[in-house]
Structures are given as structure tokens and as C-alpha cells.
Amino acid sequence: MVEGGTEPTGERNRVPTSDSDYERIGRKLKTGFKFYTGRWTLLSVATLFYWIATQALRPYMSLHLTDLGASETQIGLAIAAHPFLSMFLAIPAGRLLDERGIRKYLVVSLVLMSLVGAGYAVAGTVAHIFILQMAAGLSELGAWVAIQTLITQAGEGETRARHLALFSLMWGVGIALGPSIGAWLYDSAQFPALAALYGGCSLAALAAVAGVPYRDSTRPAPLLGDSAPRTTTERLLAMARRPSVLAVLIASFVTLWANSLRTSFYPIFLVENGASLRLIGFLISLAGVTTLIIRIPLPWLLRRFRSGLLLVLAVTALVVALTATPLLRGSGVALAIASAVFGLGFGLANPLTLELMTQHTQVNERGLAMGMRVAANRVAQVLQPIAFGVVAGPFGMATGFLSAGLVMAGGTAWTAVATRNAGRERTSEGTSVEPMGPDPDFLE
Image (cartoon, rainbow, N blue to C red; front, side):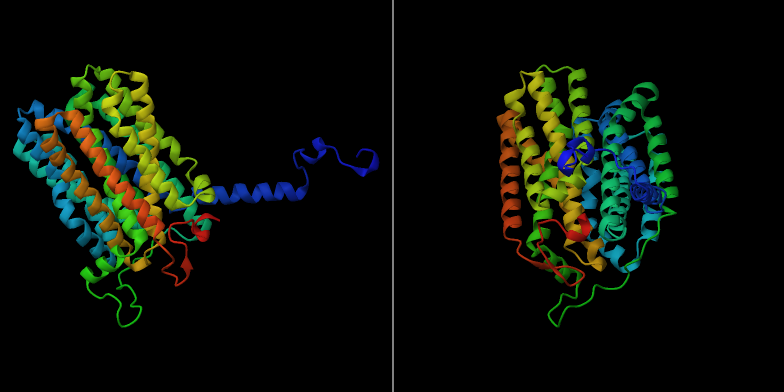
């Protein structure tokens, strides 16, 4: 203490050493240990295995089809077979989760994924790959819808926030690691090694989810009055009329439209304009790394900004970064910056749409809601290559990027309007919250 009783700044800022300080630190460490050793953490482990499996195999499917002697038309049909059936079955899949429960559905999907992996390893014709692509699309759809539905039931308040943060982190790690692991395996041991990894990771995810505790939502969603929706169609329309849910669906569509473009025509465009394969690999990996990095401070961002605002900014960032590709093709540095920005936007958009869908749907309708979200994704994945090809064929790929940018910009503007008009909605607990802002229970 100095004269006059004033404590110097250094004293005020010193490291606390009282017994109560140590007790508080001990409680935090104990809470953290309990969280990371809890059974719900296994769902994030399963998420990591799921994304390593899918991201290690998908980028190299077209190369494998080329090795099998497939024409460009056959390659396009085989690639489109993966999301095509899922586009129609995503919503029925979500309904089944609500009506029949999650565990059986998830187990069957992961077992089917492992069988598809075995099939990929021995398939020797384009026709066999085509059939396996459809089976892979359906099994991955079932597994991912079920996993997303499960994570929304991982507690409430701070517990749910931590689980969603870890879930998003493992999601990003899988997206970042998968392509690199796949490239190494494909180069050293060819496609059967990728197929084995796909099947092995599926079985590892199956083992992880076996220990996940959860509450099945097999009863119909409670009716809120005589005018409450009763049929699946009525429930879908009722959810789609909620501005917050509509914003999620549009943002999901735009995000997957952009990602589909980036994994299909983006590398071809760069090759045609003189970019080396090493540079293209670096750009794709850079986007994966920034996708992972941005998910680490996601809880901090959600505590300080409205989730709806973050979603609009994220979608805007990835749309601008991708649409500007033709203008940046002469500069590797500019392309690298754009790739990093794309990864930041993509890394935020996906977990934000999941978090917002969780906030604004009832527990017993979340399977159907996640099915709607995945359906929006699949529609984008099917329509994007068709639309781009129609424009790029006669007018060139640069015009294709411009037209895609206009479509995505329109979707982004629609998302912004939907978030602004969201208003106050009724949550599953029957309380009113700002639908596109932070949920206090979710953040505190």
C-alpha cells in the first residue's frame, strides 16, 4: 500500500493467490475435465470421423472415374448421382427421425457407409460406381441429419454452447484434414486406399455414437391450438414461414451453391488460366485451414454479435471472394487472400445455420427441420453445375462466375431481409426471444 491507502496498479493486477481463487480455478478445471470426458463429446468425435471419410474421398472421385475410362458426360452423371436422391429424401429422412427415433436410423446409415466403402474398393466399372454413389449419398444424408439432430439435444445453456462449439471445431478439422489425407493416400496407394479409409472411418464413427446419450423425440410435435399444423406438409410450410428458418434455408442454399462451384469449376478455370496444380492445391488447403481457424473464436463472436448479422456477413464474404475469381486470376497473392476469406465465410456459415435452426424449432420437429436444411443444400449441389454449364458453354467460364455471383448475391440479400423481418418468435419452451439474435441460454 502507498501513502494515503491507494493500492498501486501492479498490486491490483497481480495474479490472485487466495484460497478462494485456487478453489475457483479448481472448479473450472474440474468442469472442463468433466465436459471433455463426458459421453456427449463422443458425438463430436463421430463428426470428425464422418468428415474425414467424406472429404478424403469426394475430391478424387472424378479422377478415379477418369482412370476407369469414363467420358465427361458419365463423370458428370456419376457425380450428380450422389446428391440427387438426397435432394428428394432429406425431408422424409428428417420426418423419420422425429417419428421413429435417432439411434436406429444413425446406426443403419453408418453401417451402410461402411458397406459402400467396401464396394468402392472393389468396383471396377463406371456403372458400379454410379450405383455406389447413390447409396453413398443416401447413407451420408441419413448419418449427417441424425448427427445434427443429436447435437441439438446436448443439454441446455452453457453446456449446449460448449458442445456445439466442439462439434463445429471437429467439423472444421475434418474438412481441413480430409482432402490432405485423401491426396496422400490416392497418390501413394490409389483409390482402394481411399475406399478403405471411408469404410474404416464410418465404423469408427459408429463406435463413437454407440456411447452417446440422447433423448429420442418419437412423439409428434405438440399442437399449439386448433390451427396448429398436423401433416408433414403443414409442418414444413409452418416452419418455412418463420423468417428465421427461411433465412437459414436460403443461407444454406447459397453456401452450398458456392462450395459446389469451388469444388467443380473453380479448379478447371484456374488450370485454363495457367495456374499450377501446386497453387490450386495450396488455395484449396488454405480455405480449409481458415474454415477451421474461424470456428475456434465462434463462441466469442456469438457472445458479442447477433447470430443473424454474423450469418449475413459470412455468406457475403464467401460470395464476394468466389465471384471475384476471374478478376484475380493473374495474382497468386490475391487468389490466396480470396481463398482465405472464402474459408472464413464458409467456416462461419455452416455452424451458424445449425445454431439458428436449433434456436427456432421445437425439439420434436428438429429432425424435420434439419432435413429441410440438408434438402436446401442438395438442391444447390444439383442445380449449380447444371446452371453454370448452361452459361459457361456459350459465354465462357468468366461469365459463368458472374452469373453464379448474381444468383448468390440475390440469395444473400434475401437472407438479410429475412433476418431483418424475423420479429419475435415462439421457441420450443414457449418463451419469446429475438429470433436472429443470441439466445441467452445458448451463450451464457
